[in-house]
Length: 451
Ligand code: ADP
Figure 1: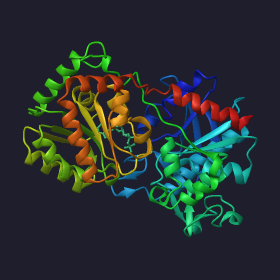
Figure 2: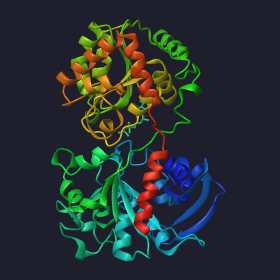
Figure 3: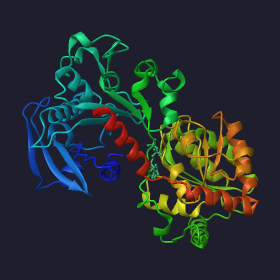
Figure 4: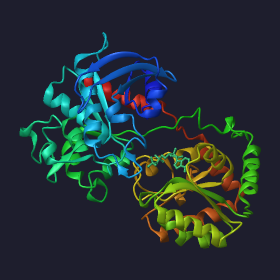
């Protein structure tokens, strides 16, 4: 989102600069960038901010090697979460708030837009150390990640003791940087309208439902888009579009060949983190009947070791019909969307979700659970939607094997009706899934905020 939104927003007249930690790989790519900010004391060492541009996006990198120049991913190393995550992201938030408040070489932002728990303290630092006239927006991408720290760190994190109560910073006896952002930001957004409503309910709010509900009118949901230049069937090797679909058939044949599959019915894919959130554990219960009905499946993903094993078992049970590749492979995922007939997204919760939107764009029918952004992007093939000719996929609820199995039965039936199938596919491919609408919505939010 921080890569795509600035470009889309530029068309509305908003100029956005993105601040990121200079993680090891990022730092290496920023050699020679200008130093535009010095910070003497960032929890155990100094930091500086480098300025540059990547793919047209103005980028600010917080270079503090003692916090970010290390092995592993952004949040975790080989032995789990980095133990100093609370201060690593307090530092990012601190510098963001200071630069916003004080301005940078003649550039003074109107709004600080913070994303997820990593930036949650930025609105809090504005609120408790002075806003400098800057408004703030807090966006929740996934409420499952809340940035928890023990209460004794309050002073260390430069947060005021008077705010340590349940109405402000305290969260179940500790500190949650996400909650800090939610209670102090001028506006709260999340990445789909349905997720915004769901977050106020205990089944989805993960403890923060009361906090979100209390912000009431300040909360809204704005759908993410997908990068339509990167995700474009007419730019794949087996290029196709609505007017000439033969490339999709070629891609399907190549996929079956590569994975040793022979599938008379619909070929479905899953491209996903393999976690409970994504409902991957439902697949072993529903895929046998789907295969019996003529369907096939390719799974690309990694994550939970038990689910990886369950996917491998499924492939072993149905050779020639089910294939699994464990790992993260973006090039392969393009080939999968180009060649498959359907993409399965049975998530238990889904703030926005991207793969169902790739599915729409590629005419790879999304079969999705009716939660969060999935509910906001796919028009399910209900009798009414079919009669009106507007369906773009198949939706099901509740998120269980019975409903999912029924959805797959529907998929098999639709696939046997070429005219209906072509209509569904055309509807899907005609859906706008780019960033334009999202950018306009964010621009509207920003304008109302500074008015
Ligand atoms: P989440 O952010 O919860 O994982 P999203 O659907 O919002 O789910 O985004 C996931 C992104 O990661 C999508 O672009 C998806 O294609 C990609 N992705 C997930 N797993 C893999 C994988 N194994 N290989 C390639 N891309 C993947």
